[in-house]
Amino acid sequence: MSRAVPVPRPAEGRYSDSVATRRRTTLLIGLVALSRALILEIGAIAFVYLPKAYPMLVPGYSPARGGFWFNVLLAPWAHWDGYWYLSIARFGYAVKESAAFFPLYPLLVHVLGDNLSVALLLSTVAFAAGSWVLYQLAAEEAGKRAAWFAVVALAFFPVSYYFTSAYPEALVLVLSTASLLMARRGRFGWAAVLAGITSAASVYGVLLAVPIVLYMWRRRRPLTSYLWVAAVPAGVIGFMVKLYFTFNNPLMFKAVQHPYWGRRFIMPWLTLYQGVRQAYVFFRNFSSYPHLFSLGAPGNTISNVWNIVFFAFGVFLLIIGRRYLSWPLWCYSALVLTVPFLYPASGVPFMSAPRFLLAGSPLFIVLGGYIMERPWALRIYMAASLLIGALLISLFATYHWVA
Image (cartoon, rainbow, N blue to C red; front, side):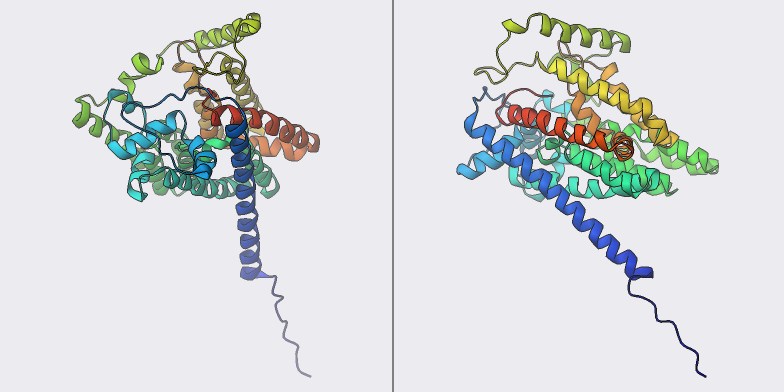
């Protein structure tokens, strides 16, 4: 009697993994496309129908203008710092103020085509890649279900429009998260190299040295392995060399912070005090301030309110984060939140706090895990994110100050 030979089902082994990967990738692309389309639609409607403030332009740089659809759909996403990055992409570091902006993003824009469309496409592709990498990291930290909630929370975060603007946030997201993922998997050479590239796009890249070292220590790697950490500040060092030959000052990116951007080092408890005080002053004199969408020069006083709210939200995620994050990722998140404390801006102590949260991708793993365990939290988060996001998108698209 012949023996039956079992025939493997097509949903087993590598085939099953391949199908799951394709489905996951398709869902991630759909999520990115849906969230970006929503942002572009809200921004376009706001740009057409709401009052616009005076644009704050960069010396020597004239924003590109085209037909109706270009002006409505694309032009609003280069406002504020976007003009600086596009100016650097075209003219290099022509004035001292530009030294505050790290070079990797404008360099890539320059290489790929040196125009706004290229800059926005670069950011969007980087965000899609960053969402995929975040899913991988979150799945290993908190499980696949929590990973989906993490990428959804990131895609619809109220200021996620920076991932589709002429800003380096999406580039920092994909590079820093990939570095953390490599470190978690024990591939420390890749982790250090990716961190070094990240440090050419943002000072946050240097902070990646901490989780890399902690993961090495957990795996009891030999001392020679720690030499990889020397690659982490490579991007910053390269930027300093560039600044030395351009301005004869390798620390120009730090020197311009106070005179041009109002940032200076103070003790963190003073930053907290000033932030709370500025928010209180706003509420106390609420009736005397112009409304949000006023004409004329854009004001930033009201941003003290949502800046401290976003920062408090980040602190909340950090407090509950040890339940969802390994110790190295938690430490990196804590360092990300520390930066606004150390270098506040005059009059707006927590300036750019919402943007800073985007650099702490592990915080969204915490948010994903928290939402996964509480179905009601997802409804509240999405409702709040869509409402707050619509407001902030509209402000940003009409030249008003956000963060």
